[in-house]
Image (cartoon, rainbow, N blue to C red):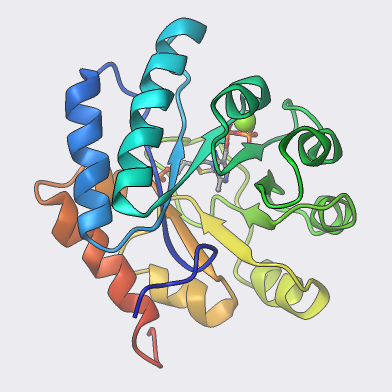
Amino acid sequence: MTPTPLHGLYAITPDTALPLATLIEQVSATIAGGARLIQYRDKTHGRDERRRRASALLAGCRAAGALLIINDDLDLAVALGTDGVHLGRDDPDPRTARERLGASAIIGVSCYDQLAPAETAAAAGASYVAFGSFFPSPTKPNAARPNLSLLTEARRRLALPLVAIGGITSHNGGSLIAAGADMLAVVTGVFDQPDITAAARAYTDLFLSGDPL
Ligand SMILES: Cc1ncc(COP(=O)(O)OP(=O)(O)O)c(N)n1
Ligand SMILES: Cc1ncsc1CCOP(=O)(O)O
Ligand SMILES: [Mg+2]
C-alpha cells in the first residue's frame, strides 16, 4: 500500500555539511524505505547553497514519486515550485504561503506544545499542523515538550492531518500514532542510522499494522 502524501513517515533532512551527493543518497534510501514526504531543513548553508541542494533534492524526489517540502524559506519553495513549505513562529504566515504557493501546495505549521496556534493555522489554510518535541530530541534539545494528550485533544478538535516530531524512534512512534498522529516527522531516527532504508521501513511499517503499539 502506498501511503497517501500526508500519512506515514515524514523524513526531515539532517542539518549537515555532508556533500550534496551523500545527502541525495540518504534521501533516496529513505524513499526506498517507504518515505513519501521529505522535508529539506537546513540551518547551516547560505541561500545559494540551499537553493542548489533543494533543487537537486526536488529532482530526486520527483523521479522517485516522493514530495519535497522546504523548511523556513517560502521564497525558495516558490522559486523552485516545491510541493510545499513548513513554517514556524519566525517564518512567514501560512496565509501568505497559501497565496504564493497556490491551492494544491502542502503548507505545514509548527505548533509546538499548544493547541491554539494549530486552530489558527487550520483557519489560515494550513495542510497539516505539527506538535513536538514529544521525546528528547538530539536535533533540537531545547524544543517545547508536550505530552501525548495534546495529540488526542488536537485529534478531537481539528480536521487536518497531525504531525508528531521530536526524538521519535520506531519503538516510541507507535504511542504517537495511537494518540492520534497521522505522520511521524523524524531526523535522527532515520538519517543517523547505519541502514537508512531499514530504519525508514521500521517507521512505515508502524502505519501498516492495525495496532501500532
Ligand atoms: C514537521 C516539522 N515540525 C517542526 C519543525 C521545526 O522547524 P524549525 O525551523 O526547526 O523550527 P520552527 O521554525 O518550527 O520553530 C519542522 N522543520 N518540521
Ligand atoms: C525540528 C524539530 N522540531 C521539534 S523537534 C525537531 C527535531 C527532530 O529531530 P529528531 O528526530 O532528531 O529528534
Ligand atoms: Mg522554521
